[in-house]
Image (cartoon, rainbow, N blue to C red; front, side):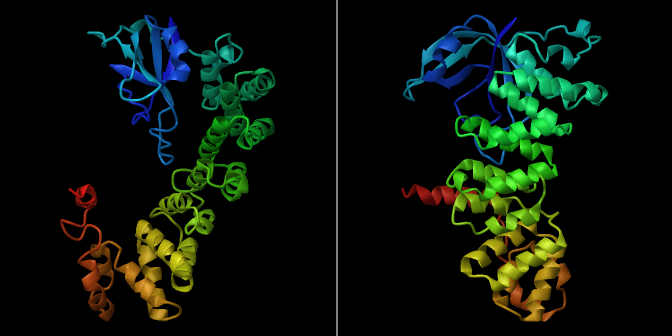
Length: 365
């Protein structure tokens, strides 16, 4: 029988190596010591790493292990490692389980919080149980005392159209008593992709309560390409005074950004102050679509505003696309020097080379 669930990411914040060790702070020593010699289950959460952008974790149980000992981490104060047994020589025979069926409704009120968590999370994906799921989840919201289970129940209820689920997510989003759950609420909103989710994420992105807080960055990321793809909602933040906020807004765009948003970016590019123009240029470089290129050419030909920014930004786009689009025009002659140094244009302009060179230059040896 599994005695505990240990959370670890693909690119963990701690020094985890699931087949050898599980790294953790002093806070969890008693809990880990209590399961030494017992079977534990590994769980991959929403975030693949400590980076807010990495929200594509599988949210799945992926392996079992058996801690054999707990030792001090000599390299990091107040941290420990649980050493785990090596992997078995053969996989378990699961053939007799293939005919099993699972009804999450049976476990919504189970004794184990792990079983309740798995059940409420599964219900949003069971269209065959939709009619019974919303009432069961709303009852769970009234009775559940484990905050993680309650939030997951709220997420599933909201996904199935429950106002009660939406209200609980909103309560936890603004909760200062459960800041970790507040972040989880933002990640759930990112998954929901509904008008309700968009409204709350926009509010969180603008909130003074989240100033200097990574929750603001997460809300903005949720509005972008990895979440609701509400690109217009990112525009106010691309030159935000909080640079990490601006970075998340800029990185939230992609080639699917629609023309009205691109037109607004070009207007910001040629009509904004230096900080806004620089941010708009970077966003257009990230988008790098034919629509973006056409909009920049139109701005350059219109000669309204600071068109030098339009020319410079075209020089940052994919050289092949630019040369094909502007073949035989005088504009291409003006751009050629910039295109020689554009990303990917030569062997020293690709991302790997730039990363390696930057690392070496910082050594100052």
